Length: 245
Image (cartoon, rainbow, N blue to C red; front, side, top):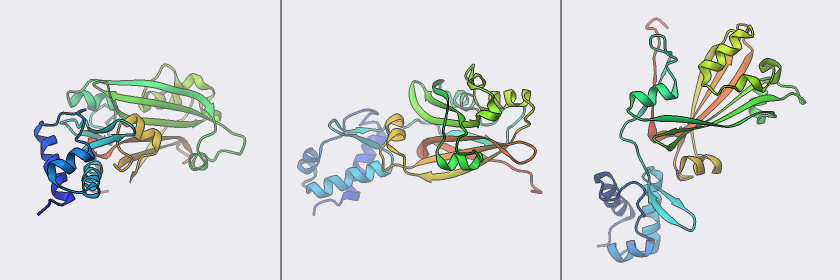
């Protein structure tokens, strides 16, 4: 009796997890799966789709399907901080996991943010924000996208973005301008858009976590919106609060 798509996917998943199929390896084509398992083109395609949904493989148009590179250590974000650290520092958490972090600032300019962000910042129709987009890597592999938006009226100029730093450094610079910052995070699971999937090297069928950080001043005005996007299978979020909250 021919195997089902789920059974074929399970066998291929075992080969990936055991290391028989290494990260970056080209997966068998649909034709090879048809010959190997005596199945149909439709069933072979469904088996690959199941592996994509699980985040084990990615498909590149015109090239084929490849084994996804899955790190052995889940990355942890802790909010609020422990001790004197930022608690959510990308570099800090990567080093704890034994990974080498690096960050590339790919955009730092004044511009009009997406409508939802502009609404949260209460920008007028002709007002702009300082937009900072950062690509984050672990051991040279894409790991996270982060884009922050600060009203130009608050930032003063694009100079606030330099030298490049994470949110803790930016908030220290805002404090120097008289803005004391409090933070709130919102978490959403969704499908990646084309840019995110391409940078993170994941399938559009795989889920990402979108963590939106809002930074408020003491009057409750939103000073900064930061959107962090990363593959859901690479991270574990850890939140702490007082027992009497």
